[in-house]
Amino acid sequence: PPPPGVSEKWAELHGDTPLVKDCPGQSFQARRLLQYLKSSLDDDGDILLETYLLSWDQLLNFMESLGTMVGFFSQKVREKITLIRELSLKHGAKAHGKSADAPQRPTPAAFELRNQAYRSVRSMVEAELKAGVVNFSYRTDSGCRTLLRLHRSLLWLKLMLEGLSEGADGEGRLKTPGELSRDKGPRWRLELVFSACEPERLVNFGRRWRRGVKPDEDEILTFRDRHKPLEAAEIVFLALPERDYFLKLVCVQTQQEATPILRIIIQALTLVHTQTQRILAEHELLELP
Image (cartoon, rainbow, N blue to C red; front, side, top):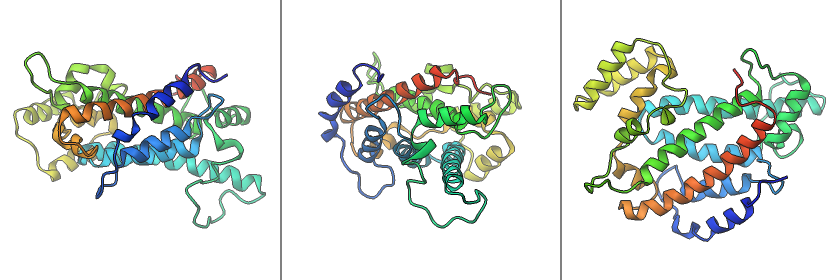
């Protein structure tokens, strides 16, 4: 059964959505993100994959606007979104008796996600488990494992927005995104920073950044390309733009205006994350390698 109170919570949320305005001239649109998140919540407690992935398209626009280092991680997220859409297309081709490897004509945004196995999170999970393509011992390119990575990334974004929605501290000062990341500790980093690369190089890079000696873009790209995604994660938080930049992304000018809008987005992300978490937990998929 659907989790209790989801409909009511969204109805509450909907009353506040007029606060969220279209923002001309930029790719990220908070209003569109909210529309997709709402449409992804199925009445029976499921998550519809087409609109879930469209939500991620908007979140990607958000991530890619945050600079070179965050763009590195958004590229990895994009690969995961593409993989689920490709899996759906292959499944649809197979269901219609076509070769999954045959050249595909341009496809609409639905990517065969409106029906069949990849219609929703639950239907995809059940289909892949039945087909035996999910492995609990080693990594596979299954939709379930890919979705789990997106699910964790959604939590990372939600936690970041929660930090940005916080007001001033006791001294009346608003913390920078980089400071928030350090205060939040491991929850923000999730699995991203638990890596064993060149710790001394990473620490030195971060120290220089905190001292205000910011490397130029070529140096950032060199560092990024020499390290795996996990190894560069700590630097992402140091490289986040100032708060004013985030305010512009939701078309406001002050923290006072931004806080209620960010909380609306956070609530919507929480509803989607909670339902996805419940489905993955039911099938013991939260610890896939």
